Image (tube, rainbow, N blue to C red):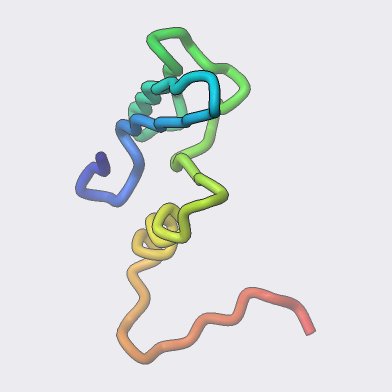
Length: 79
């Protein structure tokens, strides 16, 4: 789930293998502090989003926070 500012607040990530499946519960406070299955996750400190490699949707959250105007293009790369 996301807050009003498009920061990730909670995610449940399900994975499956031939042998078993698992669910990981991730919670964020919107200020960069995270819990993974209820345990503080210092390795993620300062991050605002959960970025899942297999999901293009998670890339949209930081873009949405940029509040770009329709039809406006942003270039962030140096030439």
